[in-house]
Every structure is written in C-alpha cells, then in structure tokens.
Length: 262
Image (cartoon, rainbow, N blue to C red; front, side, top):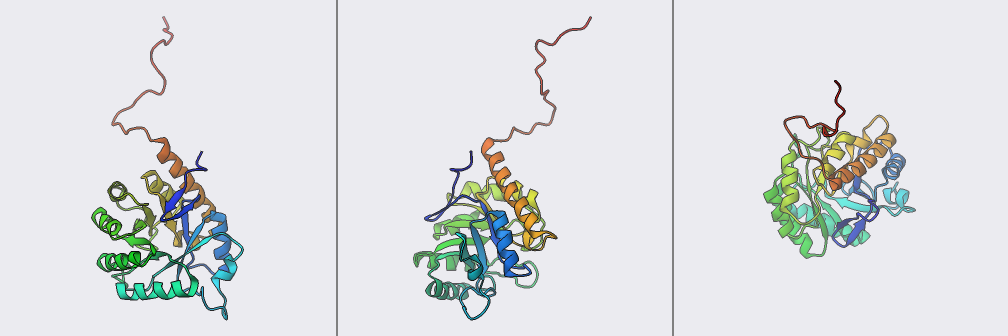
C-alpha cells in the first residue's frame, strides 16, 4: 500500500521516511549496520566532525560506497551563517554534494537550540546558489514559513533538545508547521524511542530524523529496526485517518436487533 508513497525533497524521491544520523556510534562499521537495518536512504554527516573527504584516513564514505544511501552533509558546529555557507561551498567543491542539512546552533552550552535568524540568512543564500536546503529549526510555524519563502526544500523542526530523548514536547506546533508550509516537514532532534517516531508520523510529519536514539541504544541494530517499523506504522495510521476523540463511550457493536430475554 505504501510502496508508491514517496518522500519528495527538492528533485529527489525516497521510499523510506526514516532518516538517520552518523554520530555517536562506536565505529563506522556499526554506523553502516544500523543504517542498513533501518532501511534508511539518507544519512546525515557532520562534515566538521566526520571524515568523508580525506582518503588517507578512515573514511565513512568508504563504508557506504557499495550502497545507494544518500549522504546529507550537515553544518553541526557552525554558529553563524557565514561559517555554514563557507563550509557547504567547500564541501560541494570537494564532493559535488549540494543536498544539505543546514544546522546553526545559537546556544552551544546547554539547549543546543538553533539560531533561527542566522539559519534564515544562510538558507536564502545557499538556496540561491542551487543547494537543496533541509533547514533545522525550532518548532515555530512562523519561522517555518519564512524558511520556505527563503527557498528551503524541507523544514526540520526539533521535537525536543538534541540528544535529550524527550520525544515531541509540543505536538500542536508540529501540526501547525505541517499546515503552514507546502514543503516536507521532517521531525528532527529529541526522538528517544520508536513510539516517538510513530507519534511524529501520526501528526502528519513527512519523515523523522533520529541519531542518538539509535546510536546510543543498548542494541543499536534492534533499535534501528524498531524505528523503521514505527515510521511505517505511523505513516500508515496517518493516511488511514484516526477516529475522532470523544469524551464518552461508543458501543463497538450495534444495539439494534439484539435478542431479548424474557
């Protein structure tokens, strides 16, 4: 049923609606195994922290060279628009990749919340330069609309602070963002377990990105499989359409035609 339900971002299409990260794994081998178990088609890579260009050192690209998994470079570690723009332009020169996750952190000490003003500035320039920008943002529908107008290919609102595992803290805002924009909405950051991913999809999110919940699980491979199944189930539930909530009971069986006992 969901085979033709493709995730379309910019000019790319994907069967899987689960995006994974590459950080916090014990080694590149486990990163690959978990990504394959998740059946993800996109993996984010913090290009200031993970080697994908230096062939003289252990290289993540080498582990994924026999797969069709799309690398999504992200600008983790950048704190302003200038840094992010420069980083992505250099990355494009080195790898040819222009499909990117724009992530500019405003509070690097405690919340790791994004600096949305710097993100908006960088998004506009990168989009004009031909990049497909997946913009990490707060869960503000107004900012989501601004990012869409600036040329973003997708909005990535946080569910909760990065790595917190708290799950979606404001379900209404995710729904509001989905209603505010016409581009894909990918819930990012704060997912802790499979049920969090299912909830995000049931709210209407187009995809879920998770890293820490898989990489730091006691069994990353099993958690990757759980996340895959949760995203599929959540998407199917959303498409099926849930029943309305009621404050009272409704009998599952009709009362008409019941046998009467004397």
